[in-house]
Length: 103
Image (tube, rainbow, N blue to C red; front, side, top):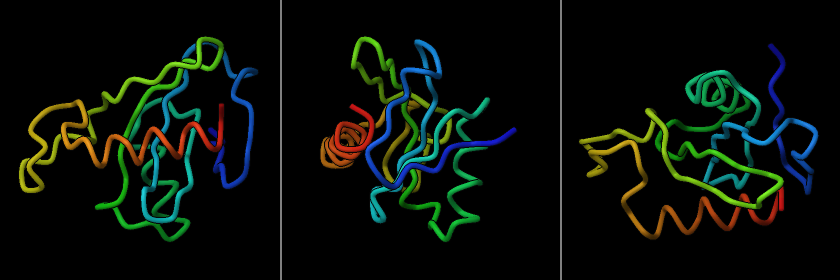
């Protein structure tokens, strides 16, 4: 499967009403359109991203909504014990990058 690596403003509307994404909060890029969030994370790591900077979310392009839930977000060692991004600073970075690149 081919994943999208998004580095510049791009529309996800053609991908349907629900798109899984992983955001590199350091490099401010996104991998999108994967079956599992971990697949998007692997694509970003191949592009030079560090796993510690990768956070999963789901984008609803037509509604311009985001949820911050993904299995890759469970990181007890980093203080995130849930599938949802709990740290408001990280959550805001993820949201800002998504809004900048796909909304």
